[in-house]
Image: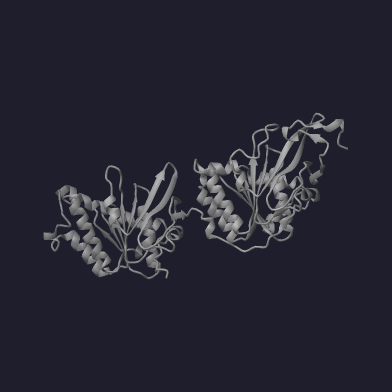
Length: 482
């Protein structure tokens, strides 16, 4: 039986924890300054307020005025957030005050402790955020006393049926291992250069999605993008062959591309990879199917102009919503964020064909992470959803030294279609061929291809040539193509 869950107010984080927090427990949120601990706590309280729950924010560091100001700037109802301000004020410095809030002998008369007890008894909150509990460490006589005091404090809150989030700025100089042992769950917030991540390493009584997940702080709060788990998604779909609408190209492919397959179009720059991929989308649009192109390297206006110059009516496809062109700035998106964009297009807008143009641009968004792993997960997800995937791969060599791909992704593709430049009679010509087709047979010859203002023209098989893959073909027995 699935346990009751308490949403955190951050949908991506709730997905990582399979629904949210387990009520009546204490969770540690740890991270450095500016990592988003306070923002996460505000989301947690705002979700409670939206559910007509009573909440309390206890601050021992940042003044209450600043907490409420931040909440208002993020769009939360700051007037509904009760704050107990235990942060030191200016009088602490001028009067040199000291206080030991957890001394057992003085607990009844200690004003700070009494303020916490009074606030909890008066408000009777279901959710409490304590920011930051590490401030207590400086008020304890030793590590043993600190742990004992924190355990007692947490027990007092949990006995009231309260779900608690408490924060820590643990570091190598001031570790918080003891707090991690005490808590029922641990959420880590990290930032390396410009990349923010969130991870869950402990969650008593529940499974969770392990590993690092992308996170972003925006003017509306925290957004979390869980790492894609393709096995969690599945959609039934009919196995169909998707034609290009060009008879000679479909002959080469023995009908076209299969629905739910991954196809790699590979070749040097300017050879026509993207244009041929969009030709399949043009044909799909005629059937009322929606396609989406993610452009990592080319502006939308340039792409539209190029397509219209070769008789592909992309603007009318956009107007009919059978095509979407999304320009992606690679360094602005993590792989998890990009996967979230793709999922939205597939699950909400019912996209049937997805093109990634190109792999080299997508590699920039990975930022040194596992390119093959991220791309594999994304393609597998799309396949499970019955989406046809087109990957555009650019190779550096213009002619000679034939390579299908230079990034080791051939294994995950069902089809590999390659394009080459040829030198014939002193002219640069183009040829297209199929290197791999997993779901059906294919034509083993190459065909010349031209991209003209009237569209894509594919010729007859080049039977009289040898050495085509080298880029410098020769006619067999001196026979030239007719």
